[in-house]
Length: 219
Image (cartoon, rainbow, N blue to C red; front, top):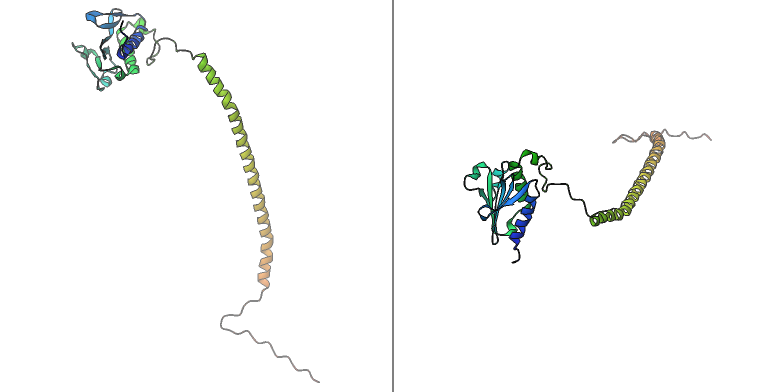
């Protein structure tokens, strides 16, 4: 058998996703792959070399989907019912997460309510319980926490030390300021008294009054 090309691998991924829904099965009418539920198709897919074409019913996101450059309303009047067809020339052009969301929307639009009720809340990409993290991933996460613990502890000590130093510095500044204020309060009255004792300077332009002449002593 010839090896699968990349487009066939993408188709296989999308097929597996579609088959994971309750009651899903596949059929090949007219030679095309059709994914069905309760004998009603919710996804058409065809691969031609590297090209992939698919169609899904999108009652909620049809308008948004048709703004994309690779989409168009599905032919044969299905476009009026919300069906959208996408064309891709190669595997690298296929936005797999988007197509999976389309498959989910299309299945919910076609499947009976009793099957839709078995699904998780809307927006979950893959039906069923969420995958549990591997032991290796859990081990890496635990190792990361252990490695981060000493760093966190050291950082905490540094922050505490900085706070202590800052507190002591603030106390010293407060003490020095208090001493300076006390000293200024003591010096101010003395300086004021000294200024008061100093003789007043003569008015400008006037000579100081001459002192009375001393009397001569009689011999």
